[in-house]
Image 1 (cartoon, rainbow, N blue to C red):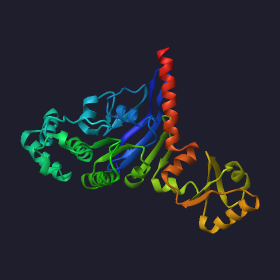
Image 2 (image 1 turned 180 degrees about the vertical axis):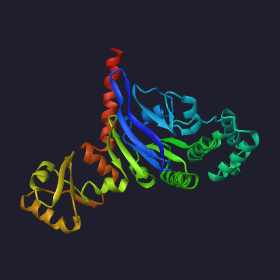
Image 3 (image 1 turned 135 degrees about the horizontal axis):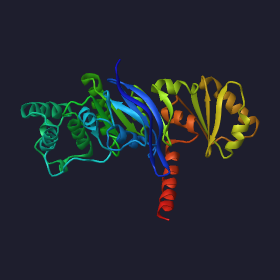
Image 4 (image 1 turned 45 degrees about the horizontal axis):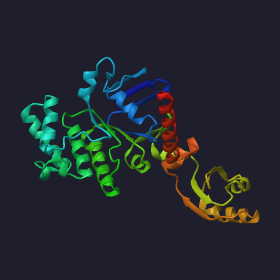
Length: 328
């Protein structure tokens, strides 16, 4: 397997803020690789450096064997990108948006026409090719942006939060397209998302990013298996008492999170009655108890002690404080 991206200690600072902190990894050709984490974790900044829109503060990277700083034009010819924010011209038709993009990349006219037809068929927009984009739904626009990003046959496709704001049905539909692209076209796809189920469904491997650092990197299944069997969540009016009561050797980990206690253990079904009996014997009240197999959300909680939602809330607070400091 050849390496599509090589990243070595890639770092980006904005004054005192370290947005990306010494990230290093290799991504294989044809792999769907996920950069997973809350808003503000450094995902989009990483994509911006790899696509030559931002210069790194330090470190290096190659995309399709091309250095991102020494040969920006070469990198740009090798990649496609779908931005988090829409970049289509709403006053043009789907065909015109595609054609304009092809002209920018100097795709010959006959080949351009052929590829536009193929790609609009791929994303099931061939019947809407002559319609103005402003009449399209959010899902149709995302599909058109993905098709446009593929027009010049990139070796690497960057998808920055491609399903943000879409309804679950449309999101699942797009997941199918993304998986098909990697499998049938052999394109390396770098996906940023904070939707845990999106990364779990699509990615061969994921890097979980928090505060600009990679805190975990592996296949989703390996990451989930690595946190220790099943997850039991107990809600109680006295969560600290639950934590204090649960010190059995068959419990891998116990952690309080707000008014809930998260327990990692193997074969949870065999131990639930023992947990309930133990808490009752110590007169600890239980409001609810739930068992589930580990998710990537549990992996994030395991490594950070917080959920993605908590991290996003903390990031917004920190950014407001930082902006006030900059203004004053």
